[in-house]
Length: 199
Image 1: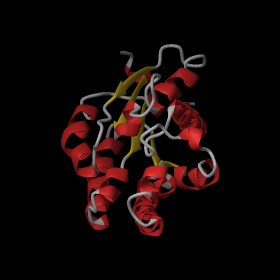
Image 2 (image 1 turned 45 degrees about the vertical axis):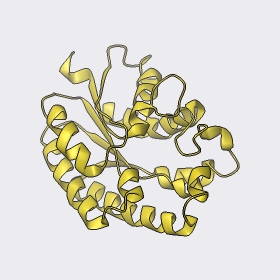
Image 3 (image 1 turned 60 degrees about the horizontal axis):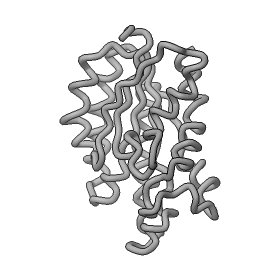
């Protein structure tokens, strides 16, 4: 793979497209949208279903550090929220992920956590306000990390609060993961930041 055209994605089930019948997660959809302008762009998707920030640090980071990417995207945290991982542990894991990634010299786009308190499945299990407050707290850490390391921050939280209410078609049948259409609009939201980094 030409080093200057390698895109490395790190993340959780949304990176690999759990919930979509086909088409993959947001990284595959970003590549599909970029391919007309970057026909030799290749994707190395290291995302894993169920990944937490510590899991990413332990299993995905080492593989990423063996590459020479032109672009990196990082989307992690929703499983930490759901598993009640302390937010300071998440912040430390994020820092220990980003510091070595920066040494690769590639631009990094980091996405914050969508407001999945709006997901139908969440509303059936926990009080929405509790889930929402934890997401906001974790997103504060993501915002601070992005600012500290000059990463391109993609605000999926604000987007989700506008895009998700009243649009059940954006969720898969499990009521939590995006549908294929949901991943499409997720990729569309990330595309401007990714395109700016590639250019």
